[in-house]
Length: 383
Image (cartoon, rainbow, N blue to C red; front, side):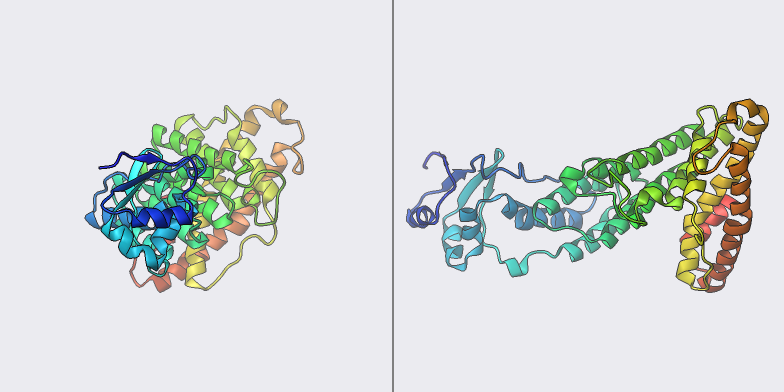
């Protein structure tokens, strides 16, 4: 058997044709640095499902690997005239120290990203399954297969339901690798809502509440990075200026102070998030709707914010009463603590509470006994 040959440059077409004519040789080629610009082909660890393992393996060989090949090697696998040659006489190439046997591929039969994700997400049930998400996204990005916004939102929601919020955060931290960019308003809300769920699912115990607040603040921190939002506010849909997003951070800071710090806002986080929330509040912000989907979304999105507002009112009232001298400074755009505390009371009682009560009524009337996300969140927090 011939020794492996390390190519000093990408294999040209004429060379490839000559090599294909060489009889009885197991041809082995190593990719050059130029060909390795995408690094190693993303790998997957074993999952809890044979079906999921099969789908991921198919994606790795049929979608990810071709994105790491040079033009000559891609011609070999995609051009019909080369099919019989590389089938009868195996050609082995090396990408980042890993050997792959080239196989004929038809671009028309490549796995669909949309359909594959639709199959993959329901199969991801165990932590060992979710640990493959960053590799999946990295491979898709290298192959220029970018999931649509709705798919990313669904991905974050499924992760939240599985308690895998940390996996989503890791994908966002590795945005250069995964392409999981926090710039869309709905996606960012779903990701930071995962922090709320972590606190709620822990029964608001001290450790769970602390971790939840930390995760929410990590999301807010990531938003300021250039790879996500960064820089100046780019539109009125910029996630950084959305009250429903800031309101989740307020809720978690208020829950920690209320349940584990005797209602004390020692680090001023409740005050700071409350001030930011009131600053960002716009009129009209909330709209009543008889539509069951909008009503359910209102419950899901605004019940945690109202929960945070009502806790914050008690915390800040206590803080104002006990430290009047400390809070004579002016908060930009709002005035003294006392002024915007009154504003928060007004917003909570005259805008948020009526919205929630009416939305709950609509959802109850249309749910027909089926579980609804908004009802579950509302009842767990406020019923």
